[in-house]
Length: 248
Length: 248
DNA sequence: TAATGATTCAAACGTATGTTTAAATAGGTC
DNA sequence: GACCTATTTAAACATACGTTTGAATCATTA
Image 1 (tube, rainbow over the protein chains, first blue to last red):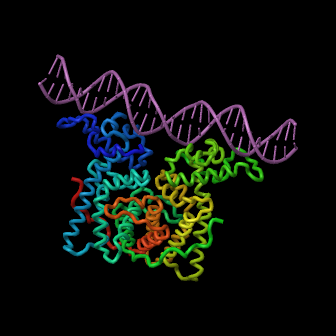
Image 2: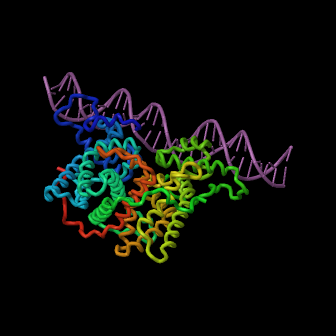
Image 3: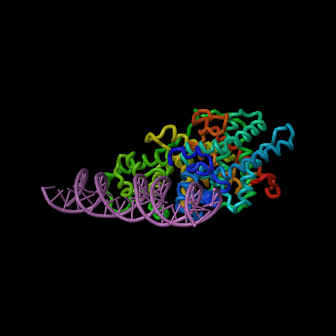
């Protein structure tokens, strides 16, 4: 569980047997594992989801995961690929659509974020297989070891993120490009919080969270990250200022 | 590990023996456990830190944790109390100091966030025991089960959060109060991302993160969350709009 | 010094984990 | 119908986990 060799297999059958037949008999099993894994990983977290709970939910044998994917970590990668690939296509398409409308003009910042988030929302609202938990799953990933996290991000978010950061850099020509990339990472933090399922927690006394629709949440977080990423570069330089009271 | 009874003990010796002596012989052991736990929980995550790794790092016997704290979960609570209590005092003090300067005028938003974050930064820079990882530990908490997370937030962040949300509401009288509370949660997401140690990951192709000081990070995230929380309430209402292309 | 209770210690308990194995089954091909 | 191989199955493996136990040790008081 601590090496990444399993990730190199991309997805596709764990290559124990080379020659594959036309239509796989185990394709059904594969899919049921992917769908159950997506749901459980997203809801309960990755490391707290045991292979036994997972295979029970999928209605397949315990050993099926290792037969079809090779390891739990490779399964995680396959789940993300399974869902992220079409979602990323939708994201790029939405960005291109907006760009086409505006000809050569730079896009509006909120439209860029909307193109990024709409496909995620959409997958939550009406998913093909009945349960698309990808956004929450991505939020769960933040708890993974840094090497795993970096590998997954680079593989499944790298290209799409680059495209959106470039669009944001064009939309905000007055800000340093590196600052935009840095702030985009902070925006992802807000977005993940929204999807983590923890944003509903009632922990601010006197402000129990309101029950709002996912669409309202979307617009709420878009407004927030748009304001954040468009903020003027900080005038104040940090050091010198210090708070007086500290651990006594 | 799934019930919260252990949390009810607050911190203090696991009450197996009622009558305590003047100066505890085990106080040293207690402290070494707390400090090692803080560091390991923050660096490697809570559930991936075993009691054996923890007690080895602390140089104490495996059973000492249960003797002094009762359980791993109660230890987590004690660690947070140990560090959060003085940090929260510093936060309130910083907020009060700023308020005193401005008499009855509402505070600037960025000053409010600075009062919230400075003590956290400060604890990272120069900590009493040599290793203060509380901010990163809080970021790790996001991966905990919701019940645990909510209990810890209410206990250790509730009061201070309420104070800061109130200050922000005064500073931004044009925005609905509930919106401020909601956005504060999103701001926490950005802040936790910054402290998670994952913000350094190189996953945006062509934009490897720059090595910047913690003070610069602080000002960067303050600018971001200030812009985010001050953003105008979203004009656009969500439904109706939908992205065309989707999972094929 | 003897006694008492707080603290430490090595060892074990019971359970859960990801993974592997080897036999059984199924389904298409000759 | 026999053969071959992809797939499924039940069982076991090896290890790691949080927790508990009971005896040993230590410091303090009587």
